Structures are given as C-alpha cells and as structure tokens.
Length: 149
Image (cartoon, rainbow, N blue to C red):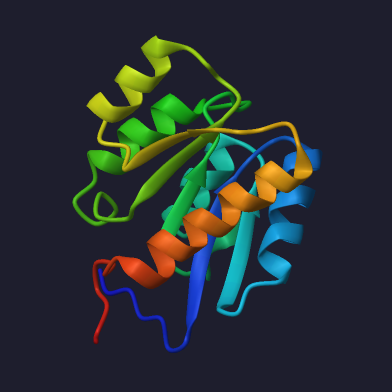
C-alpha cells in the first residue's frame, strides 16, 4: 500500500454523531493544510471504505483514521481489531476519539495497537483545540507511512 499526499491529506472520520461530525468539519475548515475529510457513520461503512467496497469503491487509503468506539453495526473496537490485523491497513495511524472514560476501553484500545486515545470534550472550543492538536501532530510533526519526503 502506498499513501501519497500530493499536497493533501485524507482523513477518515468514523463517527455516528451528527454533532461531532459537524464539529470536526468546522475544526478542519480553518486548516492551513489541504485536508480531505471522509466520513462514515458506522463500523461496517468504515470497513467498506477501507476495502473499497460497495459505495466506496474509489475511496483513497486514509493517511489517518479518527475512530469512535461506540458505533452502530460494527463497533469501533472491532474495526480497530480488523484494521490492525490487516497487513495492508495496519500502518495507518488510528486515533481513538470517543466519549468513553472507561479505563478498560483505554487499555483495550492500546492493546489493539491504537496510536492514541483521546476523550472528546463537550465544549466546542476544547473540541476544536483537540482536532487542531491532532492535525498539528499527525499531519505536520510525524512522518506517516508511505510519505515520499
């Protein structure tokens, strides 16, 4: 799998909350980077996106995945498990972005090789701050798999 930015980044947001989708879109609108935000609302659709199935046959491989844990159809824990077991997908960084405060969820997520675990704040300004910090760290500081720099 080759990930090519060509000046832009593809981010897959796996989120079933319309409010959180809206907040994430708003946070990325002011980005100085070219960010293509792709959205799926359940775990099954996320896997379809990643495997180019059904309506996502032409979807790009994302540079990073923002994954909620509590999703319909296939929950985020199972999505994380399947991605990290796949040799073609496991290199994609996954940021767990969830409301869960459960210590068990934190431990399980890291045991399943999540790259980070962030609890969603309820305040818009804090939420925006979190998204900007994700963007800054993952898209400007670290070198992602497949980057040709």
